[in-house]
Image 1 (cartoon, rainbow, N blue to C red):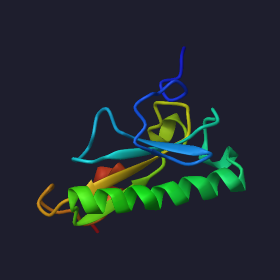
Image 2: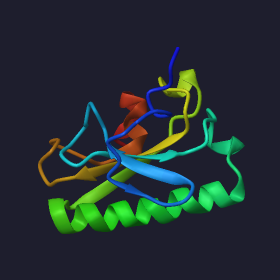
Image 3: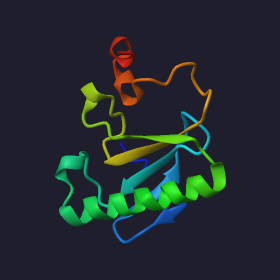
Length: 120
């Protein structure tokens, strides 16, 4: 099966080791993916240099979204393995802009991966 990230051509931002695209199925307006250029499945397999490049680009994307989409907050997520919800086995980080009122009660944030544990 061909990797959707290895041959992606709709890059929005990039550096030497990573690139950013808009998510094809966004959670909110401006949802971006920061993708490592080398094909490897999991965040923990990335080199220190690759992790540094990912986080540098993550911050660049945050600035881009802040200037162009004006979100009220962000969620950052990395799914590692099928049991954690990873469906594309090419390491990537989700940067999800959040807006007041996008859900009734945002308390718990990323804890919502297990819905009954979100509100505490």
